[in-house]
Amino acid sequence: MTPAWSIHPDEWKPLLVARGLRAFRADQILQSLYRDWIMDWDAATTLPKDFRETLKAEFPLRVPDVLAQTRAEDGTTKLLLGLSDGNSVETVVIPAKGRFTQCVSTQVGCAMGCVFCASGSKGLVRSLDADEIVAQVMTAQHLFASPENKRQGSGLCLTNLVVMGMGEPFANYDETLRALKVLNAGKGPNLGARHITLSTCGIVPGFAKLAAEGLQFELSVSLHAPNDELRSQLMPVNRRWPIGELLAACRDYTRATGRVITFEYTLVKGLNDSRACAEELVRRLKTLPSCKVNLIPLSPVDHRPDFQTPDEATQLAFLDILMKAHIQTMLRRSRGKDVAAACGQLRLRTAGKEGVGEAPCRS
Image (cartoon, rainbow, N blue to C red; front, side, top):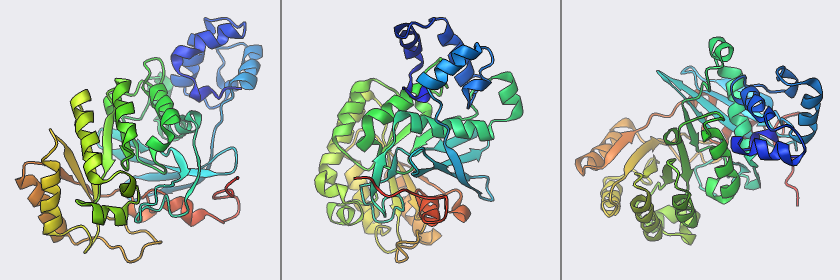
């Protein structure tokens, strides 16, 4: 069996032919999957019943269960999705004027151990396959697309996708890239490459691999500190690939692709939010051809009560130093704080409740 949402639209015809099935059915399948947005093969009424039964057996639609759904006052909605093996992952949908952004996960848990991140506080359970990544988008489409959008088959309600949920995408590179290529495909969901952002904590070999793909995806790097001593405290990955090596990979990536990397920098009160940190960060980033910075005031997490959000004056002072150095910088306001929309928080809070949470890690 091959899960349907893991199949690139260009692969359907050869897959059908290899099974002795009629190739022209591929276009009907793609219409059903990515224009009618079906969640069950029985809903593909343009296909004969016996063919639908074959699709169920050969190419199942693995629809995740919505175990929990929380909605913030600003409209941000977090979904906890149950997978077929009893594990669960989170995805967040973020509406804004003229935009509908979704944040998806690539792993159950995370092995990177960033100290302020809830996703990795219990370690890595397993990586997701491409089908399970695409299924997060399909579930959101099913829940949030407007009735008119669905009636007209006018396409995905989603306008932007960020791969910034649970897990490290470069640690699940092949399945993540397969999923993104499905979502980007013209005969698939047709989400533009420049509307897809892939985020990494800094696994250096992934930069060259992604550059070689020849794709136009945006790339974001979690930096969070201007020097190795501090970054290694916050992000254990820095001990393997320190800042100098990471920034060299970023320079090579920008020169090879022409794409501008965005650095994510979470501001933690009294830790990395000082004027000295801002000035050191400027010196580091000035070695790059170009870059952007997203400053993110910390969203406090239960497992680190000692980490707090800096006050607004401190945030603005940090921003001012970067802006005066002519580094394109945005101070990002976190969405969905009132429903714990930071990565991994809903999964942690529901783990252990009956019917919700994670299954024990399999050896």
